[in-house]
Amino acid sequence: MFDFFRSVCLHLDRFCHLSGDCECATSDAVKKMSLPPVNPYLPSDTMHILTEEVKEGQDANIVPSKVIDNSFITGWHLLDVSFKVPRASIFLSLNSPISDQNVENAVLLRLLLETLEFTINEKRYMAEEAGISVEITNYSFLSPCYGLRMLFFGYSSKLSKLMFDVLNALKSLNPSPEVFDMAKERAMTDYRNRRFQLSYLHAVLSNTQFLESPFFHHDQRLEKLSEMKLNNLMEFKQKYLENLKIDSLIHGNIDQQESLQILQDVEKLLECKDPPLQLPPLTMTKLPSAPSRILHEQLCPCDEHLDSAISLYFQIGKTSHKLSSHADLLCQMLVKEAYTQLRTKEQLGYIVSSEVHSRWGVLGIRIVIQSLKPPHELEQRIESFLQSFHSYLQEMEEETFREHVDSLRTKKLEPDITLEQRSSRLFHEICMREECWDRRRQEAAHLKDVTKKEIVELFRDHLAPGGKNRRMLSSQVVGQDAISKQAHPGIASKEHVTRMVGDQNEVVGFDKILTELERYEPLRS
Image (cartoon, rainbow, N blue to C red):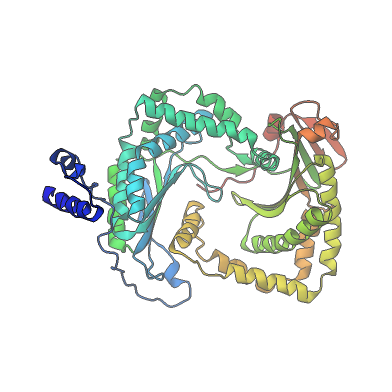
């Protein structure tokens, strides 16, 4: 090795016309040099792609099979080489009933995530250099997440090695006080910064806080986080690992036998012994019987934000393939018209959006605006728009209606573009405990025969002013511009809630109304 470096230096000396020996060719300097360590995640064979038997039916080859199912772990597998790449995905959801038991445990789960992230930094870097990625989270917008969720993507030959290295890091996790302090500071910074989010995000958060259970506000989390010590984290980690119920999916260029062995080794590694406790129910608030309106007003947490915001949520009810497809179609029409009227013509603000909101099996539609206008005026503008949109729907030509239908059906029937996209879609079904692998195709089938009358009735009953089944939650955030101009009457305190059912209005406390309202049937865990 020394002769090699000396030879290189001599060539450089001649080329650059340098005098004397090159300094870097001395024996001491060369001895300090070393090659980087071998990357353990480099794929051993990037050309090996498994083969699979093609089954009859268009969707037959994208239906996972259950390879293990006991009280500790449920594992699904799908050999999928349709993308012709030697890649795979391994998804693990490490569910534990203590994760969201209270706000303290929710904070400790966040600290567990942060300390684990610090611990595996070097492994993550080496894996990414080798074409493998890992994502770890403690929350999901789309499906239930009762703990840490680990997602591994990349070349299949070393994917399981990275997974076991991360699981071993979690099992043996014993962070130093310095690492714990860094993790705590990162979480604190995140919780503090949420106060400075845009006004419309606070309005959407208000919707979530009112509707979902369990839910812990970032202010509650921040207060508890300051009390947490390293010993609290270690005690939580032990209890968390002792009460695991694991959902998993192995998808891509890994065969069924290898997948079964991987999942059995996971169960052995995590030493699952006693059957875990029942996972807590996830429920949605059932808004009062229609017609009803609940108003939640609050001052913007950030004193520097001038804009106000409103998030109007219209609750439709328990979801189904048919109802979901009809709501998607209605919202597709609504989005374009709302943007044209409220943003372009009336120029209320840059942020004007509407979307279908589906959470824990309950369906709704949400309209969001951020503007310098006060929230009560924004609600009036939305109500006026909804009235005109009702007429627009009724007068819509059949040809235009069918164009909307065909456009949405085309979107729903679009194939998955990547292996990772397909893996995420399948794992969503697993975590929801519904296993409806052809959900998009079923929803597209319901659109085939949908009529304009059905969509008009859906809008008239649930969204239009005066609708017989209209149940609305209005979350309003009052910005500094409205406060300074005294343009928003009635909010003398930090926040208050008004319940309006029929002709009766009642100002109630936030906690009080949540305890009084019914909840939908819990999502199956």
